[in-house]
Length: 503
Image (cartoon, rainbow, N blue to C red; front, side, top):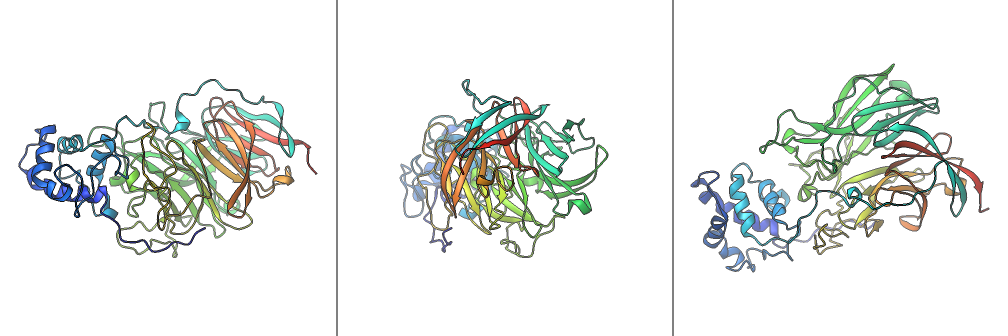
């Protein structure tokens, strides 16, 4: 990976412009009754208070940048503008004004500023309605470059299976996103585990929340700890009455078929919870030292992904009990969350440590294009949303930058997006020719892919299997077989080598 260099002084940004704009609006806002604002007020406020900084035609001056769609770096739809004014961008010097300006006043400002045309859908490419597609038969045999691979259904009758974890060779845990933890024992699916935490599942078809990942403590054989990530909902709604939720991590044990001894490992400040029902992240992995790393997506508030004081858009690192490791990069830094390990992520869907090197690899959804495979390093900035290889869903420019000083480049990216989801390094006896290679699942084309690596570079990519349901995660079992979890149908597939084609 490229070394991180010191960042140069920033040019005045669109967000910094809003700092000046909002600051000058405060006095005027105080004299107006909430709700008594229309678009004309936005124009008058800009003319009277902001033209000196941004120019009468919003063309920009030495004090403030242009306010035009081609210059926006954080989206640029009307909704983006209102959200940025409401939430602020601390690293750009812009405070949040949601508590000092009414919703009507914020909307008036956003209505006056020029916005990018088109509505940006609130979902990933991977969740859009897809045309009928062909898929490989199960049970059946598929040909790959190295093997004839036999596929079979290991478990079925499930609903949107998101994750799988082996307790031992005969016991598997699976998570169903609607909120059920299931055990497969000796190949037999057991009833749902009782007492697991309540999850937030939105009724919208683009919902991405629910029960997410499962991870076993490295010392599970001795202590029995099992870790779950999920979308956690506050009891109180947001200002507009919508539910507020955020990614949460807990640990507990199984006693019989019941979840017991639950402890909260990570819970964000309630003030950081939001109402979007997507981009929770939620993947978990333990490093060689037994520390837990997990992802939290940007929660649809993209400009906060690089804010070290906010939990969203980050990879976090904790001790198994939730305490902060002594060498976390932001520990002791004023205004930053000490759990943050890296920042600038959109929606990380896969985490896996490379057995040979101990490096952490991560997959994350881009917008329209720009899905990424990253090597995650301590304190790394991965750029979202200022740097991206994707564009907005409506085809407009999200950001003109694919590179920036101090921002880590992906090891590999996909354009168009494949809806990249889980990943795992192959480390087993069933497919010796794949040893050390990377397995990646893709939600949009519904594929399992094999990536051959040369150090930090993807040398070759091969489609191994096309599945009927969307595949959320590949897992290498103790037997060396590859297990894949899918939705619609909710099932677990098992892949074994029938014949080796290459010697």
